[in-house]
Amino acid sequence: MKTAPAMRLVVLCPHFAPDIAPTGDVMTAIVAELVKYNIEVHVVTALPWYRDHEIESSWTGRLIRREHTAWGSITRLHPFPGKNKQGLVRRALGFIAFSVLAGVSALFAGGIHRRVHAVISMSPPLTLGLMGWCSSFLRRAPLIFNIQDIFPDAAVTTGAITNRFVIACAKKLEIVTYHRASKIVVLSEDLQRNVQKKIKSKAHNRVVVIPNFIDVNAIRPLNRMTAYRRELSIGPELVVMYAGNVGFSQSLELLIEAARQMPHVTFVINGGGSAKEALQAQAIGISNLRFGHYQPKERLSEVLATADIHVVPLRAGLGVVSVPSKTYSILAAGRVIVAAIDPDTEVPRILAASGGGLCVAPDDPLALVSAISRLVSDPVMSETMGKSGREWVELHVSAEAVAKMYADLLSMVTNRLVASLSHG
Image (cartoon, rainbow, N blue to C red; front, side):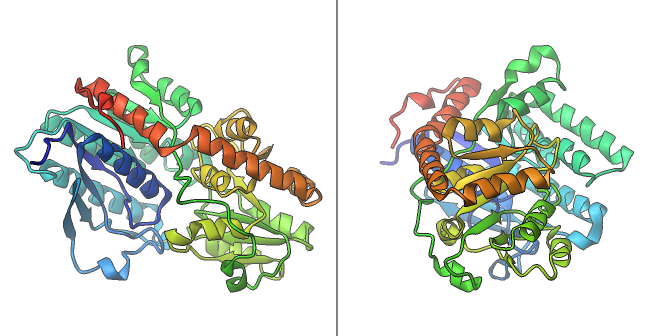
């Protein structure tokens, strides 16, 4: 006889496996761990579209797809994706359309007449937070608002949004959603302080820090001489890589300048995004710089192992509103990191605690070149830092430890003792 679930959740998120977006990996892993607590989960998400900003060919043809799982269900919706060249308004309308469709679908997820004990909604997009609140209100359940990046702060800092009316509307929506969430989950103390400054002091205790985690079994250290090196026409030479979203937040012009100044080192920018075409144009004539494409999730360990040194850059001012999840993945792969990020923010603290890399000021090409040169000239130090980072993630950012934090939080907001159940 099947045991009744300890709790029933609805989860709204922009990406979920098999989509390859980092936030999709995060929520997929959270769900995988929570269901071990005998929690029934009903996910509302988008059809896979992150790789090329269009729905993958095997998923086209339907506006909505529903599937039942051993632990609940997944409802996949058309994300109305807009190509980067189509402009901010077109993409914003796509986010709004998807969010409204997600909000409606969340009302029916798991059965409209069945009790839901909590709703978890992920941002960005910020509009998904509002729809999460609407569905939680109508289903009489508390809302847990999971924030991966503070919006619109990051978009304003990078200049992606300049229209004052749009900024004002986004900030108003941000505050409204914060005050209607039972709990707000952020990734670092920097993000916690950012949110707390924007809400009433009596609501400060709603903002809790739960870091993302990494599956140390799925991502593991491999030999540097990978098949992916051959695909990129790279031999045994030393490789410096950026792997992830190629957007305007990452200051990837720094890598182009570093490649110019260090012709004896091979550089790789691996991934896709809105800034890739512009970067490729800037890199014409730089023979020691390669551009790679997103690879299937199963090849992540191999892609990360291809590099000897990884770069994690963020533009100045973004370190307090964003924590690049790739940091944990690189450490798990046993590779050293050079982070060009605001000092005294989460990534520098992670690297200081783990011993897994070096930090320099953001948007400073000379500082980045100096740090990379230091590691290039001392391969023993690079290897030692890589091993140290791997050991740290095994101890401090396991899936089990972070899932326990979520289970405890769910117990708190629902008054149901899910965290007392055996795990595993």
